[in-house]
Amino acid sequence: MTSSEETPSFRLAYVPGVTPGKWVRIWNERLPDVPLTLVGVSAAEASDVLRGRDADAGLVRLPVDRTALSAIPLYTETTVVVVPKDHIMATVDEVSAADLADDIVLHPLDDTLDWEQRPGRPAVERPATTADAVELVAAGVGLLVVPQSLARLHHRKDLTYRPVSDAPESRVALSWPEDETTDLVEEFIGIVRGRTVNSTRGRPKTPAQPKNKRAEPDSARRKPAAGRAAGKAGGKKSAGKSTRSGSGPKAAKRGKPRRRS
Image 1 (cartoon, rainbow, N blue to C red):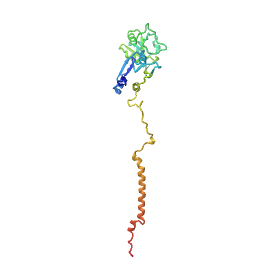
Image 2: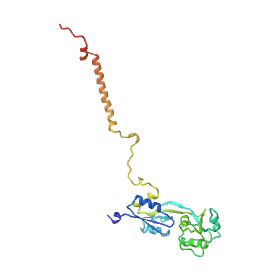
Image 3: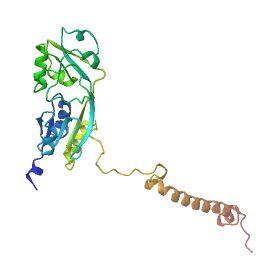
Image 4: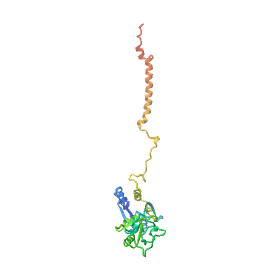
């Protein structure tokens, strides 16, 4: 037995904006003897972390390398534009990509949105990270389009955000090395899919008996035999009655005494 079998553990990578807290809590309730370690990674490096076996599974943004990794899409995020609170776009409920045409729209190097044509005017330089881009928005340099979870992650009191109706969306998925679908990975898949602790997935099922062929208890199987025995006994009793009405011994006693010759 290897040491990993003696002391199992589970490493879960996750990208910025994803909040695995609920699933981690359920894991700790169901598998208290298997510690779960969270590994924070950038969206760009998530696939490399999983391919390099530095995590057993990861909550990542699609797309991922499907030649080496399996993935289960979990949910799709709304895309929003981050603007200063005094910006005109802060006065509306929703904007379109065309509404951003006259503004500088920052494009950080860790951007995960797949645009066919990016909206707005490009900045002179691309910020290194989303966090850097948020600081530039606060400084009035430009606007930023990101998945809503990242806008919440980098929330500032002087900024707000509005949905962009026709922007590409970001999909979050659970991913893991294709050839490493272990029992613990299956356990986590069940948790994120909402399976209950009593789920029969992966467990042998006891075949149910057909409704029209239920096994009878011993007492029920003995009843017909008892009935047949009673029937036979009843036949003997009726025969006894016929002898009493005929010339049986009892009938002779009730007749007149014979005279002696």
